[in-house]
Image (cartoon, rainbow, N blue to C red; front, side, top):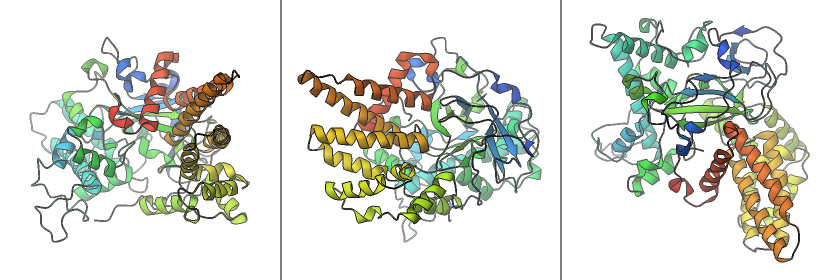
Length: 521
């Protein structure tokens, strides 16, 4: 079965004003943004788990956002906008999953405990070419299909609960099932699902939903299409990398705590290659009192994972909230091909338009035209990028080239080369600040710069020279970026340091992800 494609969307450009025609669809939740959330560390760091077993805030948390339709900032369909001016690092929302594939169950099925299962109807690329059902190719696509199948089963279980009106299910369970189903189905496009003034409330399920499943066609194909259009998969490694880990590492499930989850509110966020929001997945500590609203039924379907979203730049009131559907460090042509193939639209965000104009006026050789591993060839390519008027956008697109050049140059351990690399890396850093602030590629570059500044400082001390200025500068840049991605962490210096150490371990150390105590990035 071919992958379902998202209906084509026009990409909204930022607007600094909220004036004009607007249809607000966030009735009933407007008051939730009055109390800013300053510290989400209990959802990230096991060392920050509350000693009394209670989170210092309630979930879901909805910050300064509004869900709108027919708003001048949202060119097509529904979208989220800033309800007021927002600062970098401010939390926009924290929400639990409506449905999540339990990692233990996915792991057990992947390793063959349920080998009688046939996933060919999920992905026709899986299985032997001779249709031998006993053969299962345990690769990334197979793993993804298992996760999708489990999510389908969870939604079908909710439907079964509603079908059995005379069952022994508690009234509260029945109501919870209705609210989760209503939220899940409401992810469908506004062309398929009527928009109501209470949509924001529906997307944040509560136990008072009035869902009539008889008015919706919710068959297996519909469920799968919703999952493939809107569900959020792995947040660091892709399915292929996870499959390799599970095939080769004893008890590999400890390396991950999530795979696939449905977050209906997040599905309202549109794409931009130069986004103003960044997400990370956290985990509710294992304590019933951490989320007293979760019943045993809720834990079974929703699990413990949560999505945390922060602003990665200043956002003016009325501007659309966007994030990137794909990794940012990809050249323009490849980005557009990936978005068209997977999501069914061609991106025309500000970054894409500027990059297209710059490359039309000053054509740049493709990455294939330099010699990988050849320092001189890579340097020539980088010099061509640096001379382009829109070098900010193009630097980010070719960040892998810069990193490859840095690695080749650093192999010589030359002080002059380190200074040269830091100059280039400084420009690359500020290009990320402008285009894709606080993404994982950006953090990785900052950690490299901090390490190189430390090397130069050590050499300066040996020559009895001052070398702390660069160390201080890169420490501050790294700290600022970490606090943009994860919030100010309650101004707790130890938590900030823990986040900096964690991101260095995961992003800069070989196999660092597998040795990290906490599984997020």
